[in-house]
Image (cartoon, rainbow, N blue to C red; front, top):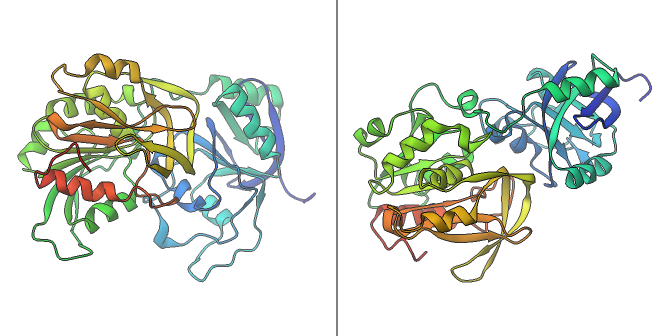
Length: 379
């Protein structure tokens, strides 16, 4: 290890960690966050929702099964940086066609390994997510801390425009069982994951994926059976064009939102969002389904949440009854909305998993039932 190039991770509060370069020789700033998943680092790296963030993996040994071309969640990774305790020097997986480090180098992602990730995560849990910088070029502590402090944060920042598609494209339905109808769904791409498209397709939907700033009138002109609001990065309140478009669509067509799409639906109804201390990121988040009291283990990746207090203020104000449908059992934050009067619902977590459990996969079938005109309040 003594022959390896030194790298440093500096946080805006002055904390500095020294380790070894892992990936692309360079320097990158971002919000430093952690993910508690034991597997799925490829899906995490290629999730567009991580744009603008430096990811710490809490599991200590990363990279042992390499990278394969089939499990990409987007065309390329959008993360700012990657932090691990130990990168596996040898990978073993019959599907793998690349090593993790080669993948990072090819995509110009700077990472760091060999630091105490347990201490780093405990620090963030205590102090909250904060701006940081990874560098293998500048190793001066004061300089790095100043760069971290001067870097842009996530609050008020529209990162959706950096990850959305530039033009409309269509995913054909590939039902897992014979269905009488193919449902035309327009999906807003705020940073959509590939497996969400797979799940919609398997549920019998022909999905027309549109850029994030597509107007509501353009969407309605496509005569969709339903509209899907995808996951994505950054501050939901900064994506004003999306909020305004969804506000125009509510009540006119069935709507299903996931993660950022959930937050945008809430904002379009008049609720407010706020930044969590360190967010929820991992494949093991417990959520309570309020309708029947069941607990679902979910995959999550978000740093903002909908304010439950502001939801109480908007219920009945043009949107009919707006119900909280799921709660996070770790901190009691809102994990889902049900709006039966306007045929809309949303969840903060990721029912498509990847990585994660499949407890909530039924929500895609619920969207189909909503488009069929079945009762929205029971699912």
